[in-house]
Length: 184
Image (cartoon, rainbow, N blue to C red; front, top):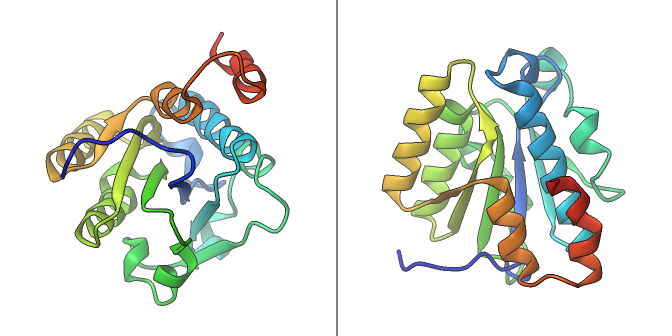
């Protein structure tokens, strides 16, 4: 796939399974939680559609409030039991937003649901951006191996700050000023 710049007008945010009973088990959970919350805030400020999945929420709980509090009112959550979001009936329709071919992914677990979903999205022609410091696994080695696999498959794997700054494009804007406090 050709190199590309993350574009807020072509992107959407996909938050995968960042749930109450999963998140605390993740290595480096506080950092991942902070970065997912910043991505959610950036999506709200930059008018990105936000898509949220929850793996078996009856057992694993709902999306952490630190992220969910930044979602626009009416953001629907997609319940699933498959590890790849794409394998779940109805997900393709849920994800589709006309003109949005870039999918920024954050959430857990990097080596299971994030990896499986990213691979299928790449196969379907999406430009996939993995926010490296906003995805996690219970073991750091699993996260590292998953990030490398996704990079080799064609995903852009970069830090959350890179994702946000590429979408902002320049300093001095009201959006830049609204997000600047999150990077100090």
